[in-house]
Amino acid sequence: MKKWSNFDYIDFYVQKMNEDPVNYFEQHKEFINAQIKGSNSLFSNMFKDGDFKIQAREYLRNRGILK
Amino acid sequence: MSKAYSVEDDVIVINRDLNELDLFVKDFLDVLSKHCDYLVVSGYVSICTGRARGTEDIDVLFPLLSEPYFSKLFNDLKVNSFWCYQGDQIKDIFPYIRDGLNIRFAKINRVLPNIELIPVIEVKKAQYFELKHPQRIRIKDFEFKIPPVEFEILYKEIRLASPKDFEDASHLRKMFSDILSEDKFKKYKSIIEENEKVV
Image (cartoon, rainbow over all chains, first blue to last red; front, side, top):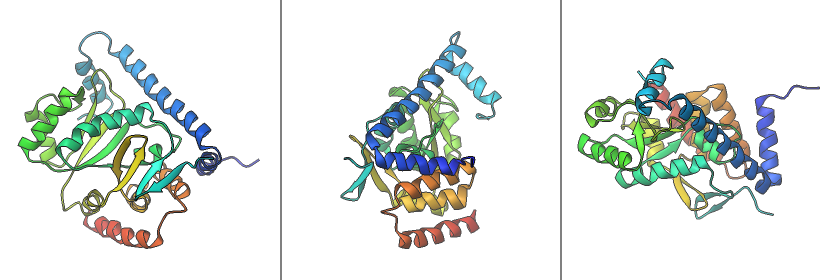
């Protein structure tokens, strides 16, 4: 059985979106919202003690996102 | 049965509810659009049209502002619960903008998602062109500006060209296959390729 590439998945998802957009977009919304909820929870716990911005900037510098 | 999208008076209408990412972008654009022009580009264009992937940042172009105008925008964003990764004072932030560097904003007490705000000047020909030739798109009551879809596809394929960008471009090609224009592809390709020579 052929292994699906990312492009195969893209074709598949667009096909599903066109066949049943209501159901597709419901799942899409759940996926996006879950990602945001997860990242909020992660950083809230990580920086719960002390000043959020100071700790966040330190983290971002260490990750190379902030110079 | 409803379709995934329609086009009404040149506005692309995506037939879905708003999600948390849309609401975050809407909050930011509600402030930004009071101060200057803007264009939402890159990953969010694909995601808001149904691409099934996550993202950490939303790229937004805006015209380079002088310090007094940028200061008003910056303060308005702070009043509306955004914080800037690069600093809290205008004296620390404006040098980034003046030098053409991007800055990032998130909601207070959050790191992600963030807006990557990208200053555009006329010599950045491709970005300047798309900023001046927007396509309007609407999701429920949230209407905002993106590049022409053909331009966004080509910019991802020619200029950005990472695996993720090719995948986003593929999504847009499939999603909007019945409205894409070959004439526009030809016109925009020359603009982006010309910009490549400059950059």
